Image (cartoon, rainbow, N blue to C red; front, side, top):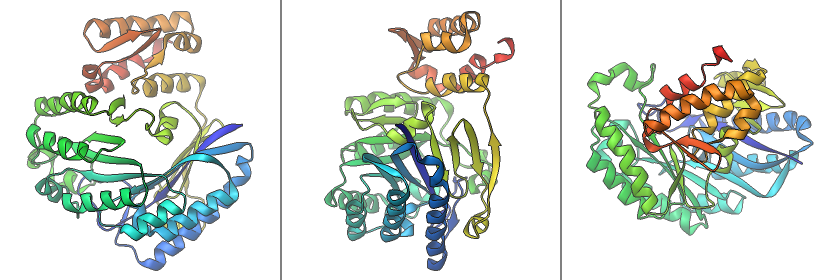
Length: 378
């Protein structure tokens, strides 16, 4: 039986964070959210006919802020998944959650309704940094929501943090990591700030944001990797860390090139050999329109490039035998020569027939991958 991951996008937030480029609408009306649940369930039902041969083993509600939709609505959507798809009894079922958007009763309802994993957006334990990001919660709000989640029975809890953000120092980031690890999370995602056009930060301009310099950001990342490892959270992807057995099974589908279906505006899919993505037309989605904007069938060369690009993001790296099988002997040798050069610079490590980036290599992975994926000679 083939396995499948489902991603369900919830494009609602209390307000728009200053760095956010995701598809999210601030302060939605209650009836708007009810209509959205109906649209998701309609979409799930219509597309289920293509999935009879699949078992769904991961479900991920992302956003936006899914918990703003309210737990009873989230549970009703999950019930639609169970109704129309073969849902594995041990499926990983995740909801993203922002502090102060759900209370202890709501979290208990989520847990009893079938959710078994929460990904909570903290970003920083420093209230001054949070305010600068445009976050509405304080660290105290986060702690309260976190403790409620534990009391509700969630044992698989993840936290998001950011580094390289305005006003942040190496010391304040270290304090964030210290305060977070004191809560014993099973998973942590850490993202370096990217200033995107069209966001509030993009309009302000990087030069006016009081960002830490590149050397400080590098120090933050390298210190974080060793600190988290010492506290039981091993890096398994460039930006993701987990206790053994708590790696995000859903996100690993993306990085390992496995199949997934996305529902809702801005959601993307890779299913049946075809990749397709939805536009950001929320009103069109509510009206039942086809909002697909991108559709392509990746060539074997493109799939091989994705194997390298996504696999090298992982701590497990890629198999040299698989690389040779995909590219052929002559082409894989070109890539291996590059890898040997990177290894001599301390950017790549090799072990047991596999190859992957070192911590230093991960810091410059985009540059290295652009060279590795230059398939004009292949």
